[in-house]
Length: 586
Image (tube, rainbow, N blue to C red):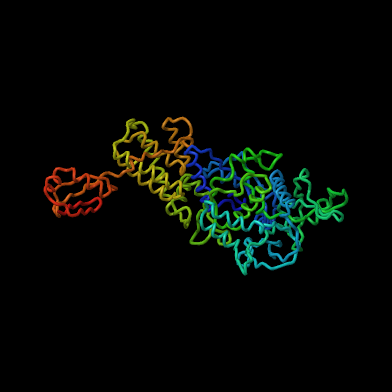
């Protein structure tokens, strides 16, 4: 999920989210997949504008400054494989041209309507809010008590898709808590045979400055007229009077050169819509733009879209369950039904990561518990921070950030570096002994399974455990050392890349194939089982711990001792304690 470029910059909770997604992307690339990890900035909206108001800086200037800080001093240093030549910004006219185009497609389909209604009004933000942006009666941005006002506003008819949004959840490979949140929000009820839903139409009008102008023109003769597509984008005008008015009108209403225009229908005098659209519309389709952001003539190229979309794996916060994730599904369904894209669900798989807390509370500037990652990257390196964050707890549950253990992760990576440097010129070319091969392939299997299911903390624990085994060996086989670096690479991309080069390997370690386990080596070493006749031990056999009773009995009956003692005896029953004893009772 692309971030708001706030002036505070990324905190470690953001790095936690991005690192977990990147590790999965790196792992899949090493499985031979073509992997595309783009990045962008969700830079329009109330959040950015409110901070600009607080700082007394124009949001256009502040946003550009914040984006630069995010990109160049933070995101480019955390070790993610972002595809920067496909970066998008929602404030770029080349992007919001197509946000406006999407509005027009809904308008032409009768799914975007203007109506007078009682709406949620935030007295502090001085704008209307969608139902989904009101949490326990308060504005989700500033926690001000929300009041009701009668205003004419633009709505998207998401209610027409309520049943499809509900039905499709059954076939989505998503975190169950997110699916449950959407089911509850859509809220289907049947009262006297009539189907009703809790879901209400999506209110998208905002009486603010910092957003894409809604592409509508009002004409006394023609009524409500859509801006012709060839005239997009309707650019957000430059103005120094951008503060919210609180009157129910956007600051754009006070810019005559913007408001006054010509009707595309009759050519007469007309007025532009002065509300801007909610920034959740910007983010409801951004994943469609990433692969085709270099195309100025279309919002998305059909061939490229068919190759890369829908998204194979989406990782983000569960707090977006009934905002971004629900809106994205709706917009995707509409574009599919209008024939613009060949799929109706945007994300094949969605996994909600856990919340990273500080002293038990969600990180927020108001609480004063936001942790800036920059100092940790400076002191310990990005690899250490990445590995430490993933080791805090299960990725889908999060954990409480406490930096007491980060030095231990740095020592672990230092030991790996020193160990490789020590053995790089004395590696044994032959395969290791059977016990070593078993341990190697069991580790590969364990880590592969954990990576696939985002159980990063247990994968790191397995890496540490296996490293202790390798350190205790007198000689190291080449396959053991290289396999270890390849398994560590998604977590610590910088140090493993350097060590790979020290080994004299050509090409990046991240373009190599992840080690593959061989099933025959997953069988644990055999165990010794006592063989008894009427309770007295007469011999022993060795079997796999997984051996069935039938297999163990068959092996035991082949021994000379059992054959001799059972000769001319009538066998009553056989007792088998797996891995310990077989007792033949005559």
